[in-house]
Image (tube, rainbow, N blue to C red):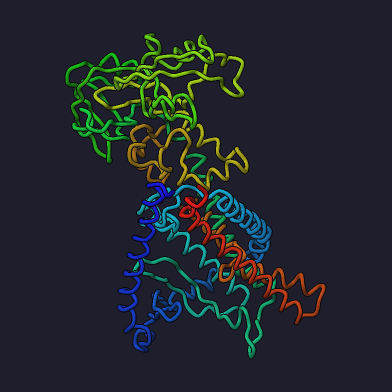
Length: 551
């Protein structure tokens, strides 16, 4: 049976397909007059088609080609840089292909539930369309990535004597999606009447140059971000609204998740104990920071303190009793629960098979039949409720408030470079998964409410909030360059990695068979890898919508 969540995402997919088809149709009609226009071609504007349908606008220019010749003058330096980077390109090609295939295998084995992570709009890494990539920083970073990548191709082309016909920008739906430098294909790849003027080694250097330049820019940007920039950011002790009950006094007053508390009744509270002492049962005046602005909101209701339930385990006693996530446990068997330490001490006095009464700050009571915890640590001798705990919290007027773990968050960020391959994977997923236990929906950089729980320090203190601009710029330039470089390494034509893979494979075959057979084997191998990569990407797109088939 298809659950409502799955149905919702399937409907969303249909909606996106219909909207996309309508936009492409209208857009193609608008481009038809340009398709065969010699006048526009003479101005450097042409239309690219897919299956005869006009889709892309190519804006070409010959201006700037002299700059490529000037930059290409230290030919020995550029050849050395490209040659030294080729092993990294091959290693990245193998790594990212294995990562894509492993992800495809797990999606086939157990298709994930549809979520915002795999929603159609978030599959493409287009700033503004993808909800995880900020519009401004994303487009700046994407522009830097495209320019660096294509200029590197152009410089190495001139180093190896390949003519560059033009350079320019590709736009789809009037949004620039790529930059390009257009080497002469006949010089680079050859044709029936015109053999390539470069060797396979020179061609591999030209094709690898874009990826290598992306990796260099990513390494510099990430080194600055995780080095002096993160070191100049200090945590602040703040409180944050983590949940608001529907229809509660806080909800009616305008409280929302993610609001940072700056002061309560004139007190700048930095921990829950202070907040609990300063909150009254009558109306309180709370100064909050949200959507990059401050405002005062009224908050009324008797405050309660305890521990927050983050989740209930499937099949647990807590789930059977109906204890919901976001509950605040304030009492167990009539004994007050003030904090996590008190909760653990009390639970260690219980035993499996015992029934306990849990009271929540929301005014509900639940009878829990304790079970035995599997693989329990020696200090966990008591019964097992079956809940995940988020930590201490205060509930007032329906607003659930916790301390911001800003120190732990900053420490995790600082530790990423020293975590090896695990840190590399965390960095790749950072915009989507964020820092576990801290960010609820990815990490967009230091923006929004995050700027209220951190502050510049040391050398960056005079910069004020501009330090966060620098941090965001470096983060996104580094991340998009890294991801673009890895994606372009995939051994699938027309990506750079596909052409590089073809030359490497053909060179290997030519050592054991005749050139004609080597060419045939190479075409077959490249076609198989291209099909494998494209199929894997397609499975990534559709797998979440087949989840219901496994039920």
